[in-house]
Image (cartoon, rainbow, N blue to C red; front, side):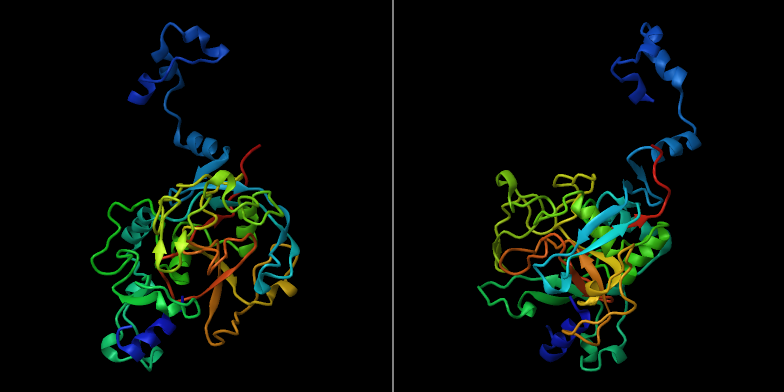
Length: 368
């Protein structure tokens, strides 16, 4: 969602230890000598040193990153990237990526709050706007804010997305729906209203980076190279929704057949085969690549990192990066970008209440 475009509409319309004591007595054969005194097992093992604990964590499938986010190691490999379903995701081509760690789930409100508390960071949506950047917008309408999905009260055509997207003054990660809303009680939901700069700043603080879209897609496919959706070939396997997407008559009525209207807490749906959650639906996720619809025609076969600049013929002057995974607003009527291999895009200074991110790390792989 383009913040500049929404503000232009605003300009036109002017609105617009006890745990050890309680362990069950299950010992290995080497520990049977301690069967007469279960507490002795705990005492003999002791509390692991910090170094030992870190080593053990990195030896397992998942470890905590420097921002205390559980991460999963994704072994590298070769796969077929893209989909013939969408022109900007074609041609389907073979890509090889090296291994990397990826956040188990999208960055949450609680995680982002810790980052802000530690650094004093102010997101793009919270900053004052420069009138020079918005020459056609009245000065009193130049207020910090972001795009919020605001469903109309009647059926509308699907040609104009501004019928359900509104620029809401005061909307930010702290107030996802605008003034009067908050993240209290929503700490485990993905943080939203995140511009590219915000996601990159968090990743740097955490000692990580944003994923390339090749890494993102490889992780999302999780060994299912030809399935229509990342979870399989059926939209509703066994009659159940596998991701937080839109059900009902878009954009008027979300019937929440999957149990959620709007955003769901992370890990509300099953993980994929790699142990990653919400790689489809819930919120869009920023990738590090610039967006060009023709990039796949010349993309490198090994660890592609995207083009050197961006170009979107729909908005030639906007700088855009790739977004992946779709959101709670994707549906068969309007946005089918939950189809495996499909791509999204976003102007780098724009956020919305269905846009977040997750991070990756180049830490060494776990010990075998």
